[in-house]
Image 1: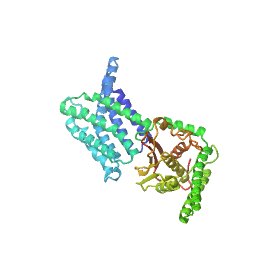
Image 2: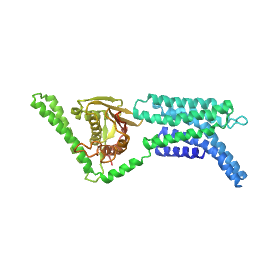
Image 3: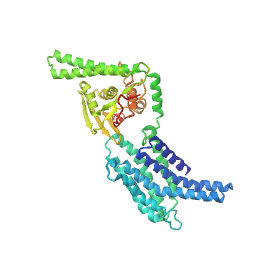
Image 4: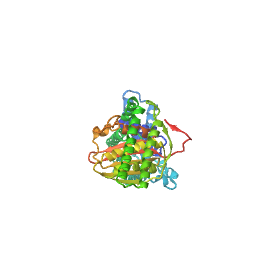
Length: 462
């Protein structure tokens, strides 16, 4: 049980240090700490007391102290685990922010666990099962049902995976504990089955650690590769290289729309309104080049963001409009499910989204479907861009953010800086960027940005 104690308390500590102010993090950390108390109780009884006794160190004061510590740890696990699990499931539920009287829910639910401390158990029982099991069982079952309902309700594929991992980590462990800690002792007199919890907890810890390395778990991200990426970007990429990449994209737009105007004029199909719209795209691209030159201060200096309040829907529509000549074979499906605004650098974010959209279009040379979806969470605006192209295998996906790596080696003027640049800019916006892809299943790019907060006038994010 030493493994259970150390593992759960370590995860709980890492989670609470990662994001101490978020309610969901506080409650899932509480689950880890209360569950770890059960492991601590077993370590005291099975390991520490026999160890001290064998060496003649178990004096009466020490024995009394350890007995009290064992009892306190055991009660904290029995009474605290169902409560913290149910509270986490409630706070994690998508509609929780609009629930009425939500500030009273923790106090109402804590009454039964708190009252359990004053009751005496029956002879031979570690806790008063006759009182605890009738409330602990509904707490755990309700918590598991809420997690599953939240998973089924989630429509965003990126957030659905996060909820799936959280549900897999929490629900099976607590349901198994419901049987070993409460139902079996209460109805069958089987008190030692709690020792099998170690195997389920080991699986839970494996899910948390594994998902933390690859995807992130409740804000916990073991980002060894990302730290290496940040260092590599500073070492081998300069402002000039990124600027070259940006200019290449905008010059391509200018040439594309210029050719369009020329061909329509030669064919006598000139529409004044359409010419005006095409010229607006050309002028916008030239202005974007100017903005990028202004933003990137010298060859080796960091990129500075000029933050302003933006409507991401409007910015995304502008990006799509500038790429309209390349979309004649692609069906664009737009879903804007949020009205939230973000604080962002218009020029840099336009470059990021245009890069990703261009990659998606180039991945479908024979046509396909480009899905663009904007949604929101409690604190974030989520941007999803998905194509139906050939996708990428694991080896490509692992290197997709590496500077100078490209899967378009046959194309001229391709520097392999697009996605590494996008990653850097999104990070500077205090956001996250993830890519999911499988061969034959297309590629999805997910970005999350903090919802807009009031910024001091002229503030720059460096």
